[in-house]
Image 1 (spheres, helix red, strand yellow):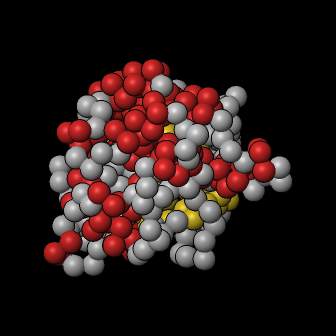
Image 2 (tube, rainbow, N blue to C red):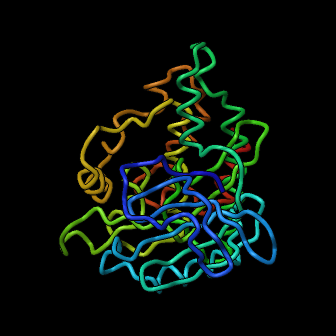
Amino acid sequence: MSAPESIQASKKILPSGERLGTFTLLKPIGKGSMGAVYTAWQEGLSRQVAVKVLMKDRFDRLVTAERFLQEAETAANLEHPNIVTVYGQGERPDCIWFAMRLLEGPSLAEWMRRRLRHPIPSKREIPLKEIKDLARQLLQALAHAHDQGVVHRDIKPENILWAGPTGRAVITDFGLACVNYFTHEAEKQFILGSPLYVSPEQARGDELDGRADLFSLGCVLLELVLGHLPVKVERPEKIFRTRASQDPRMFTATPREIKPELSESWDLFLRKSLMPSRDRRFSDAREMLAALEAV
């Protein structure tokens, strides 16, 4: 696993050299609101791994160490080439941690940023063939996870590793991502997911199934196709409320309204992926994959 999040302002994190089980932390490679990701050395097996450390003082009262550890155990049983391998997890008074396979390559978010900054304008647009290859790999991974009863709940570019058309797409952080954007009980307790990619049912706090991940993936694909997400720039809680109400204006325009040269088949595929009602979206990852192949 490579750095999934950009280095942010300094927060309390563990120092290099700290031991967590059989793992010795080497250096931080990314920081987030709840902790950091490190390269680490695993004793006995003599290999470098990635270790994600979540500090307990950053936990909301509705987010427990037990929940994270249970879900990490479930995620550790997912064996798929497009899902990052979890080697182990543990807990101590100040933190919980997860050891994962260390993979080279940028996150999809970083890859997109680099692409959009390419000095040659014609190179900034991502060919649909590349997007289709990426989507195919991600849908195969989600089909496998959903078959095991695991819903990711935070599919976004930062949680996807992708080095370009010759590389392999890998989803990270299955069951590990938790973000609480709301500050009072009336806002449906706590929400898992990132506002720009969250599904309407997730924003409402409903029971989730794999269709929530498919909506989030649809947002990612829309961003890749258009170069941006057609949403109003608003505070996270406002975006959540718009999604929760299934407001048809959650996106400011249809794909073809923004990119007229886009084929009708791509437009219909993206629009079905992003239907406000999950009953009108693809029923599962395999149906969405079949529709993708027909685009």
